View (cartoon, rainbow, N blue to C red):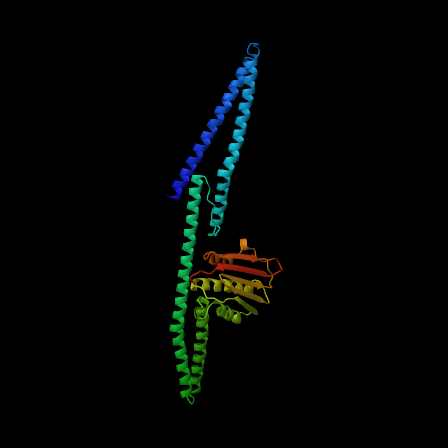
Amino acid sequence: MSARHEYRGLRVGLTSLTVAAGCLLALLTGVAFAVLLWAVSEADSSAAGADCDHAVLAAVVGLTASTALGAGFTVLQHRAVVRPVRGAKAAAEQLAGGDLSVRIVPSKVAEIGALGTSFNTMAASLQDSRRRVMESVEAVQRRTARDLHDGAQQRLVSLMIGLRLARELLADADPAAIDLLDQSIDNAQTAINELRELASGIYPLVLTVKGLAPAVQDLAARCPVPTVVVESGDGRRTCPAVESNAYFVVAEAVTNAVKHARASRIDVCLEFGEVLRIKVADDGVGGVCPASAGSGMTGLADRVAAFDGKLAIDSPPGGGTTIQVQIPVPATA
């Protein structure tokens, strides 16, 4: 059954319940008022005095009962209908904001429970879809970086070696030719360095070969701001997609600290275990608002959420920025 049909069934069911309750309350109230009016009309008759007293009492009791029933129905309706619907609305807003881990607690009301089940199924499907996209992107990045390293980069290295051999063989050649060879060697070396940086930015080779911790250490060594990396835990390796996303979370946080925080020091903590815990802290200007952060923070949150992870950002003005991430490690890793 589609979500639209379930919503239609929910609306029809709630409408029927409300109409039935309204009719019952109207019937009780009408009977009570009828009895009360009859008692008032017969109040002047002494013969009917006792009956009138009983009728008035019955009318008051009826009105009280209908009022209590109405109040009770209102409370039950709020608990059974209004509160779950508000919860569903809040969950839908979280889902629209990118939090695909949000779920609705199933309601005991059949229609609302069915709607909640459909919502949870949809959210889980979206989360699985985003995870598959992340894994696909990670595989493409890894393959592209490997092709650059094994293809273009190796050819450039061979070219530079050939140029250096030619330089040695032509040591007594025309100085202009020697200068041209020297420039070509320098250009080849520059191209190799740039290609190596490009491949590392796409997917570091050390991440594939050695894992997350050595890759982060290599990132810290190349960072223009002094960066200290501390490791703890069992050091286990996990699936490539999780390692890749964890690495790029660290890389994005470090890049933000270098470009925007005006930091003089960055600390990275990696704790390996059943849950991979990452903390990146800088001593910069702080003041990062997660709700209004740029696309970098949004992408970072998407990476973490794709693997059922949690992201927390603490960035008081003038107090630096601390980013903490927790990503469950798959049992099959």
